[in-house]
Image 1 (cartoon, rainbow, N blue to C red):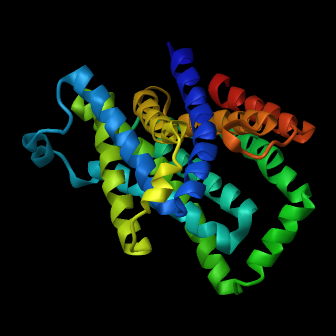
Image 2: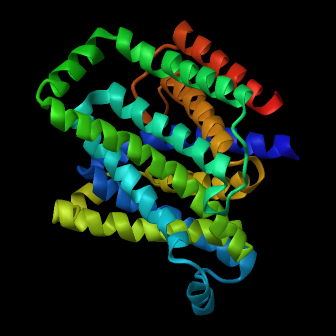
Length: 317
């Protein structure tokens, strides 16, 4: 049964890898990353609402449930929205390499702390020496698969240098710290969402509730930030498959609500990251969803193998 949950966590990462280029294409057509995110969140919320209605017979939690439980169980959706908007805001300040690796580092470190202390009523997994070694190997694999190819790409290095030289050291450190914190928020979100699903006795309703709160949060931020609505001509550019991003994102949240209570937050995060990296490699290799076609590099394969070795140490030793 554990293998089943491990497989779901891995597959959820594959879904996110496909969501990213779909949402990127939607953003190009709409002209705003935040409006595109609002549309994606809205579609995902509707999808999860239907699943919740079919499986539990209701969509929203009862008033009694809201009154009986602590306020922090509603923070998952807000933290997810903060993580999403942070990624958009970080790129023009830190560049692509740091925007990718620092939130990942925050996710893994926060996942470790959550598991070790059983925070947010999550499944407690003690931090052993083998687990530490495995995590270090996983992080090394991520660096090889994600950071190294970008570092070796002269065009990306030049772009990142141009971006980062515009930011002074104090501001850069502040945003680097925020990148790690925003990654930690993503890990905390998964732990909170899974507990919400347990309390509701319905992973679907827990995922919907979190996603709906995230939708409201990102919509309010978009109204404040963009101060405009998309034009009718921009909506006409949207293809049906552009709406799949919201469905895939909602399925990712749904999957984590199911998986985290059984294998822990940390392992769920690392398996989904592995799936995301593998999925991104496949998307780029075949140029799926109108993405730029890039040939698979040997260094990426080596990085994935290193990650798998680290995960085996974490789970088996």
